[in-house]
Image (tube, rainbow, N blue to C red; front, side, top):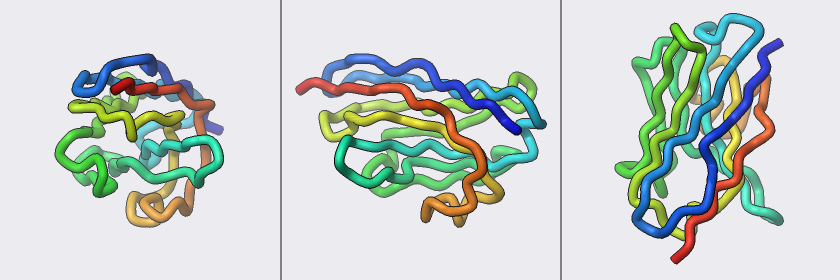
Length: 124
């Protein structure tokens, strides 16, 4: 079992930056690929970004490429999502997830554990 707890969400203005954190406890954090997903009420959950176990490989959804950066600190068991140049369409509940590898994660598959999510609201 891995427990995941997100933090760092909030209300910001368009163009602002925000950093989300996902603290992991339980089984060894470094044995999982990690990802960030987001969901708007009434819509399907979307992949945002993924990172391999070592942090050497990353993947991003097209809408966030060049603006968001995923990273991890395996010594501290924390996953991050640095979000720059935020837009109103980035408004969603952001959740972190632990999985096997990044490629299936980008399709929403092979995910084992989820956090409860943190709300990000971007005003125009």
